[in-house]
Each structure stands twice: as C-alpha cells, then as structure tokens.
Length: 119
Image (cartoon, rainbow, N blue to C red):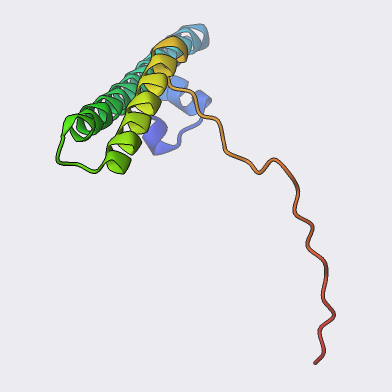
C-alpha cells in the first residue's frame, strides 16, 4: 500500500480494520524491515572484511614467493619482506579491530594565499 502513496487513514478505511490493529501491524512490519536491513548491512560488512582479508593474504603470499626467489635481486627481495610485514600487521589489525575506516586527512593545513587577478 505504501507503493500507492496512501495515507494511514485511507489504508484503514480500505481494509476495514481498527486503527489500533493497523498501527500494531505497521509497527511490526517496520521492526521486521529494520531487522532485515540490519542483517543485510552486517552481511555486507562481513563480505567486505573477508574480501580485504583475502587480499592481504594474497599480498603476503605473493611477496613471500618474491622474497624466497634466489633469482630476484636483493633489493626486490627486501621490499617483498617489507610488504609481507605490512600485510601481517594489517591482518593482525583486521583480526583485532575488524574493518575500520580512518580517513587519511592531512596533518597540517596548507595556506592558500590569494592572488590578485588583473583583468
């Protein structure tokens, strides 16, 4: 009925039900809808967390192969070890804190000085 954009009173009249019954049903439907959306959100967060975890594991494994390859230059092997350590730290943080978003904002303000325009 919400699709029809009907007011509550019109729905009550159309269904021939007591207003208290209508509002009880409406409240129950709203609670069920809220639970459904909450579950969808949880599932979405879990999926993104699992995907990020898999990406970190893949990064670790690829870096490990590079670090263990004797044909790779020592510099590249050292960089691969650094990436492995970073992936391990991120995996530990993900396990401990879950998926947390922290925006990377600049730590200092950059002043912009106005320039006079000559037209």
